[in-house]
Amino acid sequence: MQETSLELWGKLYETATRIKERKPWVEFWEMDLIGIQKEEGKKPVFFNIIGHEAKEYSIVAYEGYEGLNDFFLLLDKDKLNLTSEYVLFSQTCLAAYWGSREEMSEEQRQLIKNLGYKYYGKDQWLYFMAHSKGHFPGMLDDEEAARMTNYLSLLEKALECWDNDPVSVDFEHGNIYLYFYDQTKKQWVGKEQTLPFNEYQISYLELTDEKLMDELKNARRGNYCLEAELSFSHMLDKEKPRSRSINRKMCLIADTESKRMLKADLMEQEAQAEEWLIQYIVDFILGQGAPKEIRVSNGIVAAILEQVCHLAGIAITRTEQLPVIRSFLSSLALTES
Image (tube, rainbow, N blue to C red; front, side, top):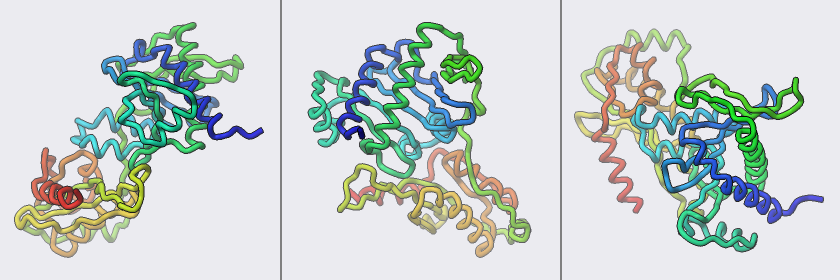
């Protein structure tokens, strides 16, 4: 017999409520990770449990190593000089939050009412959100609710295993507690596990066209300076609800001397932005000559442009702020409001 939507959500709320009663945030700190792997070679799930230092409680599930990389983007935010908004809209994860009634949508409040739950006081209302790269966060759909129920059921068993058979884990140096199915013992066990990486891995397009690379090496030198940035637009379709709406990434290039925006293009897909940023800079180099300097505000853009700038002999300067682009984005925000 197929499970109804309300039955599915009921299981999710029951499981999350039992986990909250265990108070896992007492044992685990914000940067401690619990990994769960059903089979070797299968995609693991990583849990970040929040509440040890804060009064707000949440459990975030990151799926696979791509999700793990999103977690490290959050940790490396300051090192990369990224805004909180940029990081938020670069996350893909499923999350359980215990917050206030005002934080929830009417649909979420109605669901709680239909399930028969009653919450009183601040930071007691349980609700779930799906975060997806390049989108505003929104309520889980039924398929995501089923996945989250499965993940939290396994997390509950992992916490029981931790309590019954404690393992010494060097969380401070990046190791995690891994709960996995041991094929030899034919049972679930927990152990300390190292990770394949412990910082954010920047992915970007690498030039391989030798003719283009030679053109960049031999490009004439210009006497101008650029600012380059990637940012989310926050432009909403007023006819559509905010929840799960696309938040399109912008590719931004400005001239520092004239203080003019040279490019401010919205990307149709989140993954296109890095490619187009490289293409725009290449076009400027081949058309106007190589700028003497490109100023960037964060480590991601610096890494994306590193190869092109190296080939063309352009200095990349990391700076806290990009005045021309910042002024443009401020004016854009005022126009939107």
